[in-house]
Length: 364
Ligand code: ADP
Image (cartoon, rainbow, N blue to C red; front, side, top):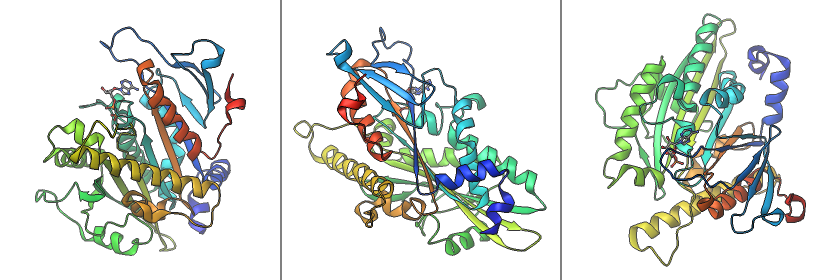
């Protein structure tokens, strides 16, 4: 493991990263009210610098309706994409040192998951989400290390819909596949995303990534009645595979970064939906609760980690727990109408962060 020490920029960062291994960090981001949404009526009472969040029950004004949560970080609606990325930069960069990293966005539809991970439609650089910024940063660092360590970067993009894995980058003849890519796949099969059939494309610049992600997003909408609907009911995973060759020693390291935009976590009233909608809802429930179970089991150092219960956790198995590092963005819609969904989102977040605050402790 000597390459970890060689590459890591400083000791403090290295220690931080060591601590992170096998642990999950939870960052909560509250999205702003959108123009034209009517008079803002918020459930978010207070956002503290120290990761504190206080929400209020709109039907119980006053002290009794307040609940306090604490996460590794909480972002107010004013937080910019750049600020958010600054906080996760060390995590992203550790991929170049041979770590496996998973970054998730969790929350109900409309809470800003895609905004955080990708950015708004047609985003300018300033609005770029984590995906573009991460790749951009990886290219910058790898460029600066060139000659000492030479990196190759490959990208995969898949979607999990109704427990089926779909390759979002398949079937595009205009994209060339390079041989190193399949080598990465076979040599990291126990290390990387276990989708042997999913296409992987080499990328050398952020504009390559933008092109690929556009293809992926287009493929995601194929066959969907309405793109928004479909994308809110499937998980999308962008995986960045990194191979670095130390030019002095000849040793090779591998790192993976999984960027996961999860399906909307909203509860679906079983009495109201039938057929396809019901099936989708059941699959989403199952995979999100399996993800929660896996992370919770890891956090509580359980001897059995239930990876096999969903496609999502199966795919990410080798990047959850062990040497891997996990970060979850928990997204909140600030609107009072969303109170009960926000509470269930926050409860999920509490559970996966391994710190479940009791009712007594949490009331302010
Ligand atoms: P989700 O992916 O959870 O369904 P979206 O990312 O599509 O939610 O966000 C819903 C809407 O809110 C979009 O129009 C998006 O651009 C906007 N939005 C989300 N988060 C922010 C933010 N932090 N700042 C500005 N607009 C945001």
